[in-house]
Image (tube, one colour):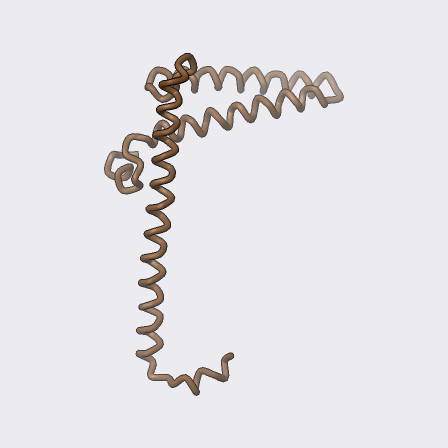
Length: 133
């Protein structure tokens, strides 16, 4: 995503970090689910296939972690730095939510005004529209 679009979305340079973090969490979830599925599988063939998927997911997790560490998005060995990054990401997410709510409120107000203008422009009286209720 280019810088202009990132700024429009209110995310600045956070986009790659957000995507990578989401991907990391999804991969962790995959690993947990595959491990449970292996434990519950009833045939060696299914167990073998799921084990290969598990190993692939573990490799993917390592690649994502390496990417995040090399880009300063993730500090698995420094809790203080990681906490600072997590708080920054949480604040950005909060700001995004607030900005979206404000924009939705403005859009609703505009839509209501447009609807009133269209209604008034049709020249229909309240009595003529009461039959619809």
